[in-house]
Length: 150
Length: 135
Image 1: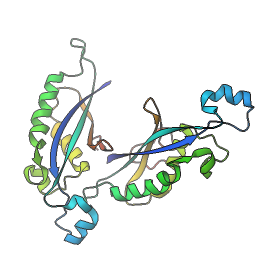
Image 2: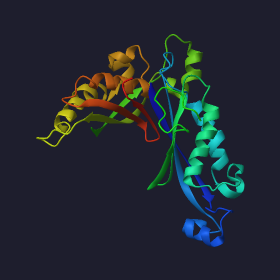
Image 3: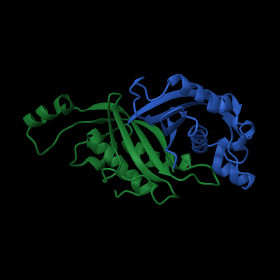
Image 4: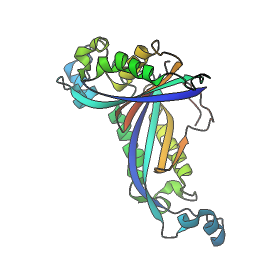
């Protein structure tokens, strides 16, 4: 069993704002991230897959396949988009780094699992170099080698 | 239990080819990595050792000894080498990042002066790395 991690980058705008709260509560809760005009980040996303090494290829997963899935599912959807306005995934959900990380995991889970023996282990999302979120699926401590429930 | 990680760098060339597959299949699966002349990377290796802190020294293991083991067991074998041709194990095994990480584990696991090998992390580029925990 090996764990392979590949890093990708995208840039997006967002605004942290919860429609269910008052203007004052949003301003207090989210501070400058509540600016109605939005603001942006250069996100770095690390995708970790795990599984056995294929004896024929010496590889865990074909990197071109992984790149294509991440390009189609994540980068085309989120890169240079306004997460609140342009992306259906965040209708009614605040596009925090936490929610974005979970959303990326769920988008990739459906596409990556069932392809060969590799499975998605972790998504790590950096909003800034000082700030990142990791998500490994719903199970709080997925056992290595066992497919965790989404 | 505490985890200590030491980083080392080496440069090597390789190419990917499975002799049991046809030339067309090799090109399809491995793409430009199939070029038989090889191509190279600057690899970054992170070796993580788990252990207890020795009460006398305050250390998990002597870093000089770990550095020597890395030098003798890994860097001397792989640095500035054509992995397919010059490292015997890769005569019959494709030197992918995955297989190199496993091989480095096998080279180091029994050679540590103290502590237990916990993880091998091998970066092929800054955007691609493999972790291996020995199983």
